[in-house]
Image 1 (cartoon, rainbow over the protein chains, first blue to last red):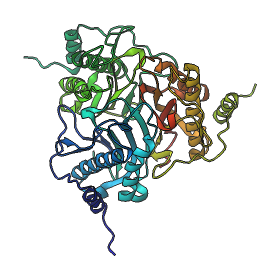
Image 2: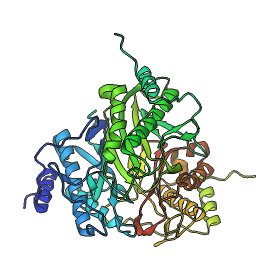
Image 3: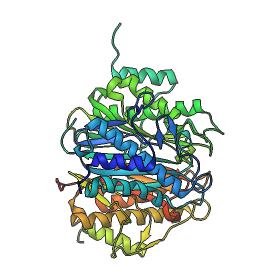
Length: 163
Length: 163
Length: 163
């Protein structure tokens, strides 16, 4: 059995979710999806957008479910990985994931933000193994851009200075 | 036509907004507005305070408007730039803006957090040009210190090790 | 009068609060409480958990008070310090605290997020002195994992490259 590359695993997960991230990923206005400073690569917060559509919207615990929010966290994470692949050539250029922030648009009594974030963490572990293990902050917010159910921000370290 | 310096552009924008940031900027208690670690400069989250008054308050989408929140994001950003000038001598000491976080106090159905954050991003581009292009996370929160409508946090890279 | 070490001061504060952090601190799933990258040490957001129980829960301004939320911020911060001690051997290995993020689960009109965060900042100053002075972002969120009243995330610089 052939070992899959990180890029192949990311593609596989996207296919399992039924989404493609082949199109352009455009940040509006005067900011960018990714900034490198030495080995550190900062990414903009990503909502679960595929193409031009945010595919997981609404308040978790009411308009949408925990399972759907977890799917949203996966899509946001895959979108981040797509941005990293395009900037660095391959996910193999990443030494390790450093930090993940997960913002969940939720009801007043929804307290499973960690369970939403676990979907992002598990995906990163599946793609990167030990190199995908990160620190994490998960909070429940009142709204998100475009009524997204979840937003994921990530910081990673590249294997060498790519500044 | 003479090219304006970054410092002059920041002054110009402050004048356009009708605010001056000449007075003291004091952080209460045991934290500071700015910490340098090597080339990386971290700033505390800034609300749109001028002198001792927070000038843009209230919930966006209800007590206050998108336009007013955008003005608040500009004031918070200018305040951050003022802190950077005082610490580094001039905005010319900045190599690039790395990351901006924008927290918007909003109603349950206000989904234009990105449009609020655009006001900060556009201002940074106007002052720094390409060096002002950054990654960004914008979320809608339930409340902010002093009932501020918006809070902006920023991380930048200085041109050389100033630690 | 003997000068206390940072580790001893942290123990003293824990005793004053009536809590012990001697047990395991386990992060669920595929993330970790702490990641080092060169001199920079990132910590996961910590809720005021002692052992397996979150000891300060509920919405500040309604189900719980400002004072109780401040105690929660202290416990979250002590938990972070415990994680740092275990990873680095001693708090003496820390050069300085860089950044603290404080998320407060609050009512719609609770605007004292800074006063909650001050409890974390004061504790860090008590333990580290000037080396504990940091930048800070405090916001009011809608919910937090396990109904915690507060969540604290921290980034510090170690004295030398411990990567």
